[in-house]
Image 1: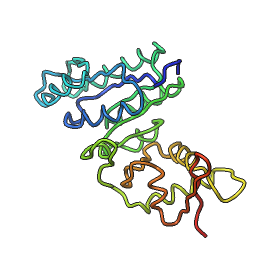
Image 2: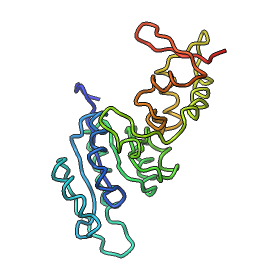
Image 3: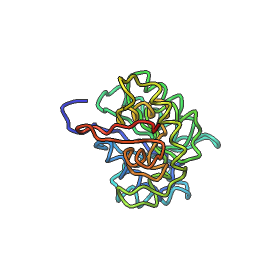
Image 4: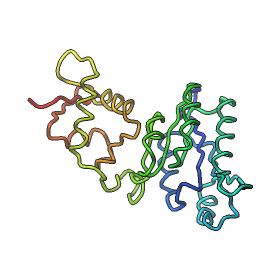
Length: 232
């Protein structure tokens, strides 16, 4: 990253695979990650099923790219997005590329971008295949963004207790002098192994709140760090 306070983002949206009604929630989430200097949405705008994107494009300052499908069955939006993603890669202007789609056809693209050392974040629906989720540095579920006010998590889609095995697995990978673990390090370790991990999936807006709600964990504050351990 350069001397900027916030990372510079290139946001690429596949309109064919993302409902327009979620555009505002998606862009709100994107702004928590960095500065979305480039925000493009791809589609064949002659198709009636993309008419819902007209208002979000105008209101959110998105740049619509026309991708005409000359052959039936071929997704021109995918091809256009891939070409421009590679152009963005070679420009070296952006710190993070955000791809908004649930289409697993982008798996090879994300792999290629990451091979070049680029941080790639994905945003998609729960239906997104694991092959795409797991290749990102981080994957964010749209279901965790919609139906909630800013800074308030959407309705939980998993039980709090389901997160405990992830915490335990992370602890097993971290060397510590005693039984206490830095929660921030635990979060990083979980994210590295599970790019789609998100405390909002379990009904909590922050990792610290999720840890506090796990009955098998004990927490304490050490300076500015929150530490956790398994209860004996």
